[in-house]
Length: 216
Image (cartoon, rainbow, N blue to C red; front, side, top):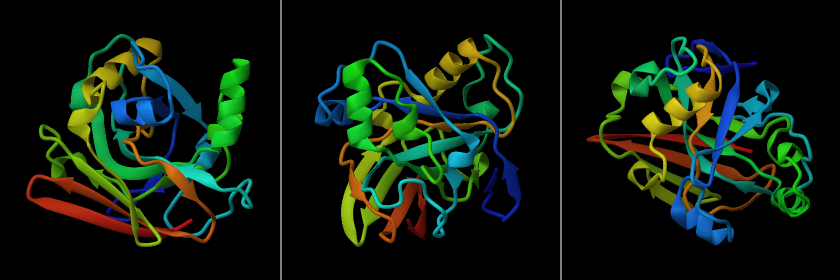
């Protein structure tokens, strides 16, 4: 499975990591508890898709959109290493699509979230910008519109666990490899999105911004 860079070149996707409950207001809107450490889940490589319409599992359902800053790992990170941003090759925005009713049932029964999070088309990605183009030392802004309506707006300074902490935690679990992706969590404002809906994602850095349009 492949993602793309801003220059059109392909990325061979490795492991896809998701981080849950990383913005306090999103934790509150779903009635969850603030985690004491990063909450990690996995999405299959085959869940990755681009911005154009693509085959979707459960295509008749309404998903919840979760707008996230997504990282592309650019070099091997050894078990126990503390790599920081220097291990990141690319940065973009993505949608972690979630079957919320299914997830809620899984949580009630103490079951894994896999069927709610990992399915064909559930990891929507804009092209990756080179890390050098993004001011990673400053807070990044992220915005999502669905069918022209503003749904989500956040800043990375509001993350409960910032990027260096997330990468250190992931590297404490397993080595990271080039092509691995990290969905870093979503701000508040999640809500329904259906196949055929149009969306616009905007990433803001110091003095510049990027906008991507897509159709689910």
